[in-house]
View 1 (cartoon, rainbow, N blue to C red):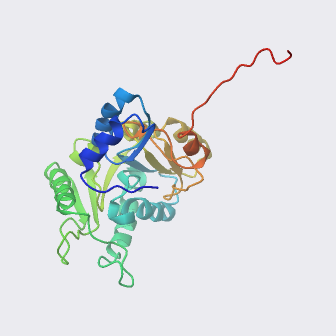
View 2 (cartoon, one colour; view 1 turned 90 degrees about the vertical axis):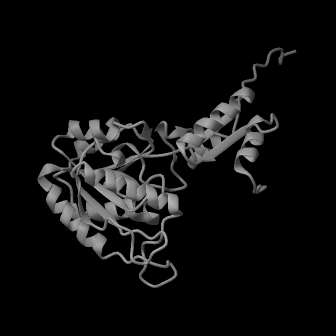
Length: 280
C-alpha cells in the first residue's frame, strides 16, 4: 500500500485521469464525489463512492423508549456527531415526543465534554472552525424559524472548537438542518403522526446512506425496512457498522459497497469464457 500526501486536487486528478489506475474508491463529501466521477469518466474507471448522509432516526409510539434513547445517543453523538452514519434528523411520534425528548435530554446533559484522554470524557471537539460555524448556522436558522433549544445550543466553555451537545425541539422540514448534514452534536426532534408520514419525511432527501427506527411491531419492522430508501438500516439498534456487512448508500450517498463479499466484488471484473473444440 502506498500513501501519497500533498495537494489533494492535483493528486486526485492524476489518479482519476491516469489509465494505469483501474479502480477508484473514495470516502468523503457528495460534492467531491461528483467531481471525481467527472474526472474518471474519460478513462471509464470502476468507482466506489461512500458520500454524504442525512440519516433519519425514527421512534414510534410502541418503541422501548429507554432502548431508543440509548440508540439515539450512540447514533447521534458518536465522534461528536462527525460520522457519515450519524443520525441527522430524529422523527418522534406525537404520543411519545415529550417523553422521549425528556429522557434524551437527561442523558445528553450528563455527557462530559473535554480532552478524550481524560477519564469520563465522551465528547470531544469539532474538527475545525468551519465545522463549528456550520453547527452554529444550523442552530441559528432553526431557532429563527421556530425551533426551541432544549439543552446546549452554544459553544462550550472550554473554548476552541468544543460545542455543547444540543437538542432542538419543534423542528420542521423548512429548516436548513433538515436538508443538510450538520456533522456535529445537534439532535433535532421532528414530530410525526403516522407511519406513512414518517416514511415520507425520512425519504425526503437526496441522500440515502443510513437510517434507524425503533418499534415493537414486527410487521412494521419489515414494512419500514423495505420502504426506507437507504443502503444501511438499523431496526431497534443505533450501531450498524461491521466489516462483515455491506456498507454503502443509495441516491447521492454513493455507489458500490465496502465490507463483506460485496466489498471485494467491487474490485473484481467478471470474465466469461466460451470454449469450443475441446473434443478434438
